[in-house]
Image (cartoon, rainbow, N blue to C red; front, side, top):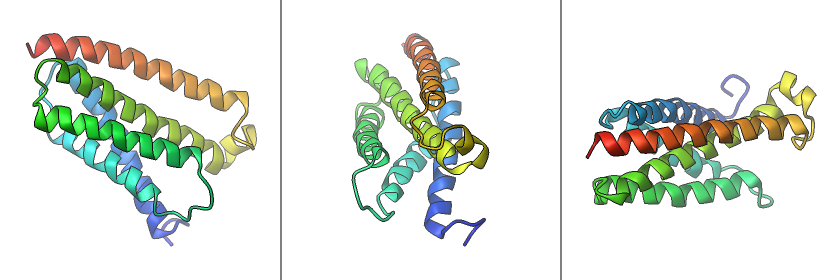
Length: 161
C-alpha cells in the first residue's frame, strides 16, 4: 500500500495528475504560440498510460470511466497521427488542438467524478455522484476547456503559419 492505495491505484493516479498538469501547460503553450516539446510528449504519454492502466482495475461492469477511457484512446490516436504522421500540417494542426483539448477534458472529467467519490469533504456534498454540484463542476470544466481550446486553436494556428 502506498498512501493507503494499491500500487496500481497510486500509479494510475500519479499518471493522471501528471497528465492533467502537463495538459494545461501544453494548452497554454499553444495559446502562447510556442513550439510543442517535452511537455507535450509527457502529456500524451501519461494520458495514454492513464487510460490503459484504467483497464487493469477489476471490471465487473461497464462504467463511465471505462467508456471515457476507450473514447480518449481513440481521440489520442488521432492526436498522435496529427502530430507525428502529419506533422501538424494544414488542418491537422486544428485537429491536434481539438483532440489534445478533448483528451484533457476527459482527464479532468474523470478527476472531478473521482474526487467527489474519494475525497471525504466532496463526497459528503455528493454521496451518489449524481448531485447537481457534480454536474455544475463538470459543466464549468467543459466551459473552461472550450474557451481555452478555441483560443489555443486560433493562436496556435495563426502563429505557426
